[in-house]
Image (cartoon, rainbow, N blue to C red):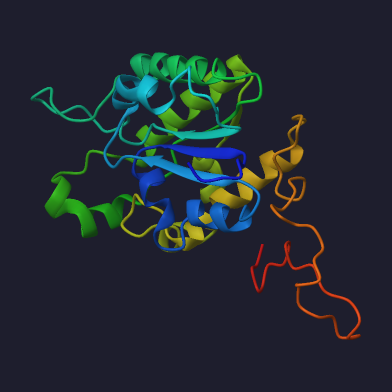
Length: 253
């Protein structure tokens, strides 16, 4: 283990999470924003559904771990919403089972610590035409539709309202952009850098508005080893030094 111990933010979900460090993704942006403030840990798994998540929940988030995460951002739903295959194989999870799986995930994570906070991401929309153009040779006939994503998104949001858990309506947030169909995806399903910016914007909004103690907003967390030092860069006056522990060096927020 590497110290000092920082707050841990865990991103848990399917490919929307696993790929969040790719293509200037939302996970990479969060890791940059929280540099020297929190460790952003990736636990994303391509192709997974809420069924997969339940199978490993105790391994990824053991209740007896000496350090529990300060924040877990959870995303499952897009793969669950895939239409059922006649063979019975495939990722499809019926809606009632999906809701119950997500409930169990939420209750397990809430039990980890009184200070563990949760944010659920609902299923984002998809560009069906782009899926046909880029993924038909891999996925075959279109089995994921924007309408099915909407249904699972709304189910996730309703569950979070019932459990008093913070949730982000990605299905709606992404479609607020007029050019979302052309700019927000790499292949019709996974997010481009523009799509990821929307995710980060919504996450930062939740973190800024939440009445959590302690606050997890990036401006509220201290920078690690942020004390003034005579070894810092010298100020223009030539007599003092500049504390650069909070410097962004060109980062755009």
